[in-house]
Image 1: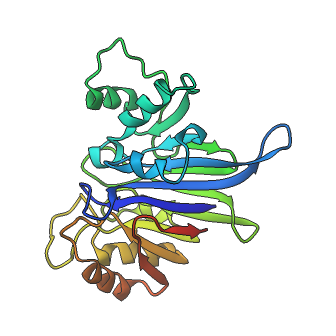
Image 2: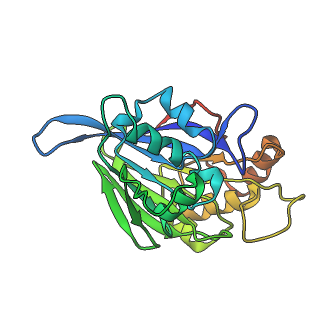
Image 3: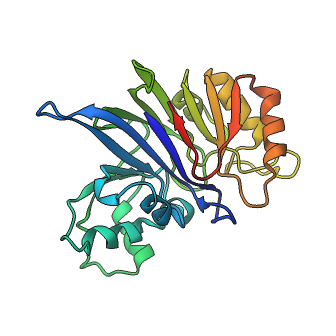
Length: 262
């Protein structure tokens, strides 16, 4: 599997990045025996559509997975709909959109459309903790997260870039909870939000701090952890320092445009 960071700031676009969006790709075999690359976008926050256009023709996208339906994680689904519905070569085939709650109604609310618009460019699938689905060779498992709206974390098992099988976990937006630890259990790569600073932000039930992200990674036994979803006013050095106190594995903080082999 391969991870491309399309956007990584939290709550809003930042000066150097779109808000949350990540492209995950893996090579698999189709029914007729041909090999091809499968592509999933996890999150489609503000500015993500433009970043995706710079690395992949959205016509080649196989699925969209949304951890929750806050705007900084899903607002560019409207741009994706326009791209697929009004493409110069004709309307593109519908692709699945996996999300908690009603993805179609949320898309309609963002778009301002009426009930007559079925958003036929998508096939909306509601997921809950315990759900699973597959996109080509990538098997997704859904775990409970702790946020201000229904939210989930994803665990993805697929082919490793180095041969064999690999596990990629994505926390979504969450405070510390057992569901996120289980999603990240023994992951080869954990992409973990850390929007808050420990000594500044004392409220709970919204996001992880650096220290709590480090605890998630340590308790899960994640082999490598990358921090993401830092708000524009959150200091990455502060967050990283607190995470390192709890987690002693390989640790980094992502930037838009980076590509990681899993």
